[in-house]
Length: 355
Image 1 (spheres, rainbow, N blue to C red):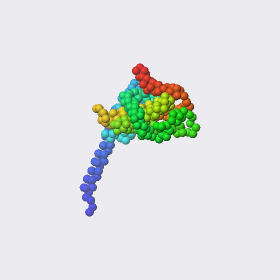
Image 2: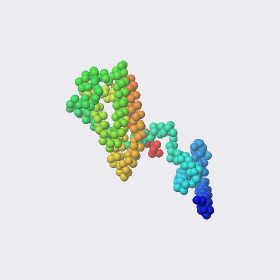
Image 3: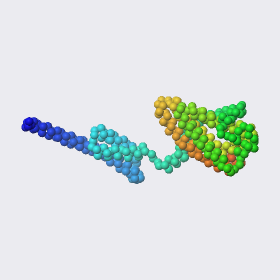
Image 4: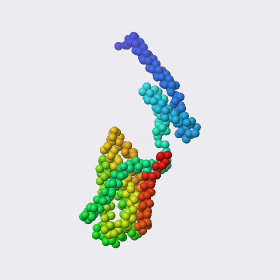
């Protein structure tokens, strides 16, 4: 059946009105976008000028007012971007604002220095400040390590069979060994590479202990406490062994040349783990996750420094100790390293901070 003329006319009129309405909406949107841009474009252009100058390193061309107004302008343009998204403005305006806000964000909140600047800041006071921030935990870790050494000594003094349980993998430094045999492990040159292999083993072992002390702090710090006691328990057992043969002074010298750095590193790693565990157990007014995150940020520089200390200890273990065959000289090197670390961590940077 052919369509009625009146129906066709009505459809044409309806389509015409719809097209006119769409054209009106498009025109209104364009007008709204133009008004929106006109009202705020001066701030956008000023922010773009400042951002471009800073990206090109032309800070001298900026006035003090420009630098001070950068955060304010960033928030203003970010607010404009939020409004533009909600009101569905044209795609070109949205793309422009998104790019400008992203560039400004890196200047306002992004990193201020490169790797070289970060490295200078780390060694120039950042590491030592992080260590001082957990000094209470360092005292706890130190008390545990001293207690572990005392317990190890007392256990093997009461029953020498405890020595095998505390000190594993030893075939020469064992109860019953002669004075000459023990003394040979402290002095002499590494002709067959045995000392170098032992140094590599000690470095790997102590690096593992240090990282475990920190990582297990997330279990409320309890495994960290046990590790600190266990790790110095074997030290106490070896102190007892060499003391029995009158070689305690020589053994302390043999140990100190690398041990003051190595044991200090383990002490700091254990303190960092205890700090994380305390933050989780006693978060205060913050949530556990927030407290854990804050503790992790405070202790991360400490643990990074611990790795560097272990590298230094490994070098002293593998080379300096074999080159220096005098106990007083070994004590001098070990004592000098201890004084260096104490001054760096607890004295260096304090005066500059107060000033």
